Length: 125
Image 1 (cartoon, helix red, strand yellow):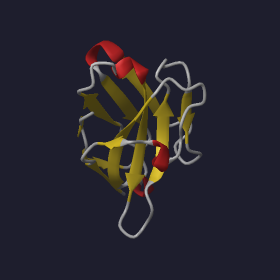
Image 2 (cartoon, rainbow, N blue to C red):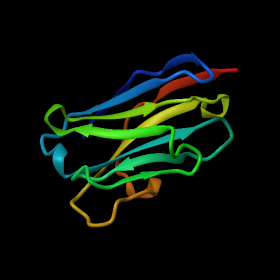
Image 3 (cartoon, rainbow, N blue to C red):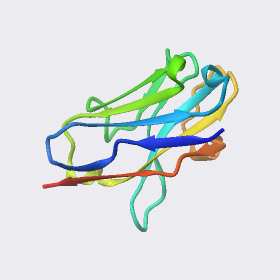
Image 4 (cartoon, rainbow, N blue to C red):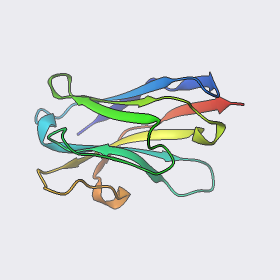
């Protein structure tokens, strides 16, 4: 599976931004998708995840209520809409794929087998 992330950029605090990730896998509909972020010197942390069915989602406490994850299986694309951005949201954002139709949505980085190249999101104060 190859993943291509796009949509990062420089925005001001309070602005909105959407990052997207497109996969090459033909059976995209059987993959859990996750968004992670990382800043220098810190471990990669999960931001949001969406199940292969699209019916289950997960958000970290730091973004809950501000970010929305969604997917378009026909386009093999997952989106992360980020509203009310804060300077502490500044990071490289990675999309990741975890194949397999599991009942429980995966939220740990070690559960994800495939990773995109990352896209920089910078929020200025």
